[in-house]
Length: 395
Image (cartoon, rainbow, N blue to C red):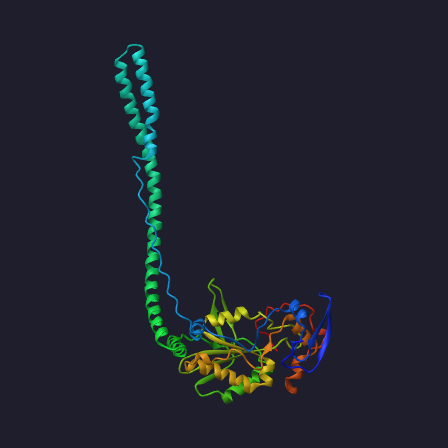
């Protein structure tokens, strides 16, 4: 039995689909026998989550730089001989055969003048037919070669562009290789992070014009951060950011709380995830539900930190210290200090676990009493099956 992080009592549930008894901890629903857990839930991810922009990820890893691959030039099309092609030579075979027959007949009837005419007719017909057939062949072959030439020209232009990119990447690689060999690992990571911040392009944010309602944990932690974050950070709420997908689509995302580092423009999105929606009990923020959102924000150079609502309410000081450590590790170029594990971690819930937490009104266990009325879930409101593909809904 795996000991849960937060627990008060363990309750036994019977699942009809699997025909198994499942032990669910009422406090955070992460206590399972290993054999039952493997049938329900094979994930190991835990809160808090930390997602870094790809350039910062590479810098923090401090991996040895990889030499870029040199592009290959396109193959130039070969010119084909047309006049002396096999087709033009084969055209003479029937004409020579006809001329030979006429000559033999002329000898047989002793009409020797016919030999001259047979040869003359064969030669004339041969040239006429050959020129017509070969001219048509030339026209088709010429058109094919023109198409190949056009394709080659396009491929050559693309190759020249790739070659320029390769040359730039090669310069970067040589520079990184020098620092990788000369510096210690921590010095190399520090150098990479400094370069990332120098080239950092902050994502655009704008006021949120939609009626997205803040939950009690968001309101609490927003005030908590404003009182305690350093003056180098703006603590923002009610903001939205626009993401453009590669297929031409677009979407707006609404950070629960946004931090902006004034000197560098570094943007941090702090998300506070609750397991189910108030009033209805519908599961939300279940495992992998927010993957697309996380990837989109990271693509736009956001740092994304995700906590559970319970972590924020019960351990605001530890959450605050975690945020400060992440920010400090990046801004002071000490990427090796970013914490990869956390003492107060909490397993990510599945849709099944979220429904069980709603069934027990689990959020009432840690939220302040003045928020109980707004998050209470009547028994009849809890859905048996609910689509959890939700971005953000009112609390």
